[in-house]
Image 1 (cartoon, rainbow over the protein chains, first blue to last red):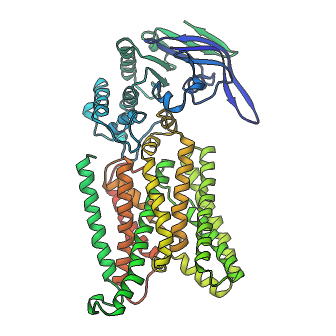
Image 2: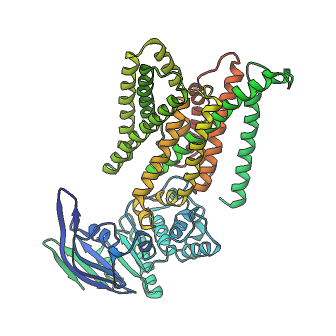
Image 3: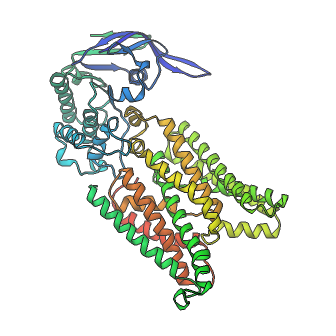
Length: 224
Length: 332
C-alpha cells in the first residue's frame, strides 16, 4: 500500500537544506498497525508530514498504491489518507457532530451540505467509537480522551484506507490509552485499514502493533 | 442546526431587519406623515436623504460583520476583526493620502473620479494591512502575537494619519475628523450605484468559501488534509475582506465594533459553526445593528446626526459583555 524507497526527509527552502533523516526503506500493507517510535527530535513528525504530503521528500520516493505521492493532488490525497494531530481543536461552537461531519468535506458540494448518505456515514463513525450519545456536545466540554476519539471518528467518516496519528496518546490516562489502541487494532483487522501511529508508549504499543519502525540518531532505522 | 430552524431564524432576522428599515425611513427631523405624497419635499426627503442612508447602514453593517466573521474563522481567533487588526486604519491612512493628493491637485468637477480613487486607495490600504497580518500569522502561530502586531500596526498607521492631518489645512482637517467618526449619512444615491455592485459581488463570493471555512475551523493541517488549498483560501478571504472594508471605509469612515462583536454575538445567540448559517446570520444581524444605531440616533436627537461609532459602541459593547458573562462557553 505504501512503498518507501531511499527516502530522505527534512526541510528545504531557498536559503537552507536541512536533512533530518536519510535512506529510509520500508513497506506497509493494508491491515497493518504500525508503531513509529524514536526519541524527541529524531524526525518522527517530519516523517509523518512527508508521508501525508504536507512536506515534500528531499529525495527518494513514496508510492501509495503504486503511484508516487507527488502525483496526487490535495483533493485525491484527502480521500486516500486522513490524519489525527496533537494540536487540540475547539471553540467556535464546534460540536462532536460538526467535527466528525467535517470528515465528509472532500466528498460534499461547495456549500457544505451533507446528503443523507453522508449523514449515515457520520452516524456510523460516531457509533463505532461510542460517541453517538455525545454528538450534540461541544468539543470544549469533552475530556482529552473523548476529543481524541472524536478526531479518530472524523478519520473514519473521511473513509480513507490509510489513517496516520501523531502521538495520539500524549494527553491520555492509562485506561484511555489501552482503549484507543484496542480501537485502532480493531479497525485494522476488521476493516483492513493501514494505521500508522507515533508514540512514546513503547510497552503499551507492543501488545497491539504488528509492525514497528524505530528511528534513532545517525540515520539508524530499525524495522520489525 | 436543523434546516427548519435555520429557515425560521433567518425569517425572524429578516422580519427584525424589515421593521428597522421602516423605522429608519420614518424617523428624522421632518415627520414624513405630515407631508402630502404629492409634495416634492416628500420624495426628496425619502429618496435623496433617507433611502441612501438606510441602504448605506445595511451595507456597512452587514459587510463589516461578514468581514469580522471571515477574519475570525481564518485566524481561528474571536478577537480578530477589521478594526482590531488595523485593517480599517490602513484604509483610513490611504484615504487620507488620497484626499490630500486630490485636494492638492484641485480636480473639482471630477467628483465621481475622485471618489473612485479614494475607494481604490481605501481597498489598497485594507489589502496592505491584511497581507502584513497574514505574513506575521504564517511566521508566528501564536494568536496573541498576531493580534498585538495588528494593534501596533493600527497605532503606527493612525500616527501617520495624525501626521498628515497635522499638516493639512483647516478644511481638510475638519473633513478628516468628521469622516473618522464614521457616518452612514453622507452617501448619495450616485455613490450607492458605485458601492452596491462591488459589495454584492464580494458578498456572493464569500458564499463560495463555506466548505473551506468550515474545514479551517479545525486547524490548517486538518483543513489541508480535507482537500482545502489553504494558501488559496487565505488569499481569497483577504481579498474579499479588503474589498468590503475598503469600500465601506471610503464611504462611511472607519466604523468600529460591528466587525468584531456581531460575529461573537451571532455565535452566542445561534449555536452553530456552519458557515452557511453564520454568514447569513452575520449579514442580517450586522445590518440590523447599524440600522438600530441609526434609529437610536434619530430618537435621541432629530436635529443633528450623532457619529455612528459612538452609538454602535455604546449600544453594542454592554450587550456583548453581558452575553460573554452569561455564557460559560468559549466563543472562540
